[in-house]
Length: 422
RNA sequence: GUGAUUGUAGCUCAGUUGGUUAGAGCGCCUGGUUGUGGCCCAGGAGGUCGCGGGUUCGAGACCCGUCUUUCACCCCA
Image: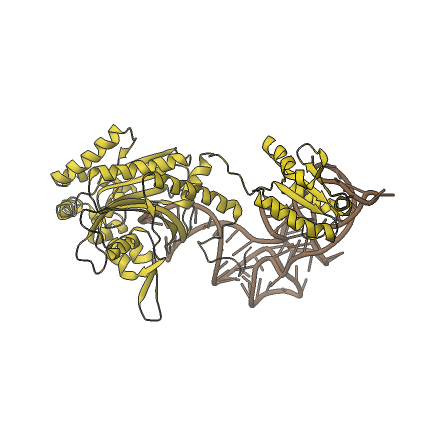
C-alpha cells in the first residue's frame, strides 16, 4: 500500500506469480541462445560514466537526462547502466578480442533510466539482449534478426511487426547530415521546438518526430537510402535479400533511426500494437563502439528486448498460461509424535521428487484439510497416533475424495499411481 | 522534465448536500459435537480513511502543499 514500504517510483517488486513468468521467458531465451551457440555474459550493473558517454553519445536523451549517475568515495563518476551494449563491449575490449575473432554473448538483467513511468516503462526495467561482436557482414546482421524473431515466436509473441532501416557507415554521416541540414533549413522555423533543437544537436532525430507538421515535412525529405554511399546501400540490400530469402516478413521504415549514436548500417525494431504507447518490444542494430582507453572501435550487431514489454505483449496475445507452484502432497499431522515422524516422511517424499507441503502449526484436522484444499494438493497424507500404532498412513485422493490405508513401504507406489493418473 | 489521473480493511471498492461507534464483497481465522477439504451457515480478527497543514462547533468528504498510482507527451526496451 501507500507508505514507506513502497519502493521508489518506477521500480517494482516481483512476487512468485510474476517471477514465474519471468523465469519462463528467461529459460526460453537461454535455450534458444544455446541453439545459436551463444553463451551468457554478466557485466557489472554500474560502470564508469564515460563508458556510456562515449558509446551512447552525449547528444542522446539517455545521456542528457536519463542516467542515474553518482560519485563514489573515490570521487569517480559512476552510472547505473541505462542499456547493455556499452558495458558488454567494454568487457570484451578489456578481455581482448584478436582480429578476425568473434564473440557472441547474451545478457539478462536490469537497466536503469530516470524517465517518468508509464505503461511498459519503468525506471528499473529488464532486458534480454544479444551481441555478435567482432565481425561485419549482412549475413551476421540477418542471423541476429532471425534469432530475435525465432525467440519471440518461441514465447508465443507473434502479432508484431519488424521494421528495418539503415544508417549507412560512419563515413556517410557527413554527407547525410549535410543533405538533411540542407533540406530542413527552409522548414525549420515551422517545426516544433524539439526539432529546432535537434536541428543543431542531432539532426537524425528529426526523422522520428511524432509531431504532425514535422512529419509532413519529413515525408518529403530525401530518403536515407538515397543519401548513403553505394557500399552502404549494397550492404543494406544484402540484408534485405537474405531476409527475403529466409521468408522473414519486414517493413523498411526510412524514418527509423533509433536514439543511440553508435548505430551504423542496419537498425531494426520489433513493434506491437497492443502494449500501450511504448510500442517497441525489441530493438537493435549494427554498431561501432570505441570503449574508453581503446585505440580502435569494435564492430558488432545486437538487440535488446524489454522483459516487461514482452510480458505485456504475451498477455495481450493470450499466450498460454503458466502453471504456478503446485503441491503434489499435503501432509496432515495429528499430535506431536506424528508430526515428528512426518518430518521424516516429508523429506523422503521430497527426495523422491514430490512437491510436499506439511502443516507445521499443530492445527485441527479441519484447518489442515482446508489448507490442503486451498493449495490444490493432489494427495493428502494423514497420520496421527492411531496410524502410528498400526504402522499405516491414510492416503486421500483429493480429486475424487477416495481414501485408503497404506503401509509405509507401499506408500511410494500408491502415491505414484495417483499422481501419474492425473 | 510537462500535462492529466489515483490514494478508505490483505484484495476490489462503497461512503449520499461535511454531522454520532467508517461499510460491503472476496480473502483470512474459529466453530457447525469424537480425527477429514471444496458448497452452505454462524461468529471473529483486521482501518493513524497516503502524509502534513488549513477552513469548520464538526472533515474520509472542502482548500493548500507533499508523496504515491496510472496514463499521455518526450524518448526508448
